[in-house]
Length: 289
Image (cartoon, rainbow, N blue to C red):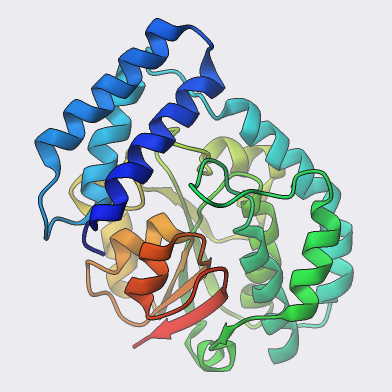
């Protein structure tokens, strides 16, 4: 996805948001915002991939804040919320390995993309997320290509998005492996925003539920192929299906031309929704071949 003029305000808003998560020290918050502004000025060009610019902005802001992890408390909270939610999610999905089980698992995992923080104009219902989950599950997918995914599940590369959300992703992973498919799970190489890292995999014991775990090789927004390990690039090229979770991964993977690829996300941003030809606040499982 290419940068859009609407992205500039959103990026700076998120820089300010995450600085306040870390500290109430005015000088540090100001330094982060100034660093973000400087990076935006250096990199913003129409036609540039949006994630390349957002990576530069966030990395500059992080350096100004001492390269700390401002979303740490949010990540811990989202992990706890996901653990509490799993019994409900599992009861709704069921234990049967089947086309319907796969579809229901995809619905649950896509709702998990709601566990995001700092997206301008979008708020997580933290106080009663269980009720929100039930409502969305009953509503189902607005774009549902799950039937078309099932013949493609032989060798799946699954790119995760947010911490906490990754636990709900395991419902899909169980279905894929139950159908005889292999799964390569991909997480960020280092903390950025509230994205899942190897720490999430270790905390939840997810490595036992997949065939291998790889990282993106860096803290870039989404997946930056220039910084990715060779084995990840090889996995993309060999995959029978890439499943790309969340908006940041859509922003990057839509630039590379890998096919077939399935985008699982909730459209929480008008720019992403427009780029996908969809509306805001949709639950999406869209296959691109």
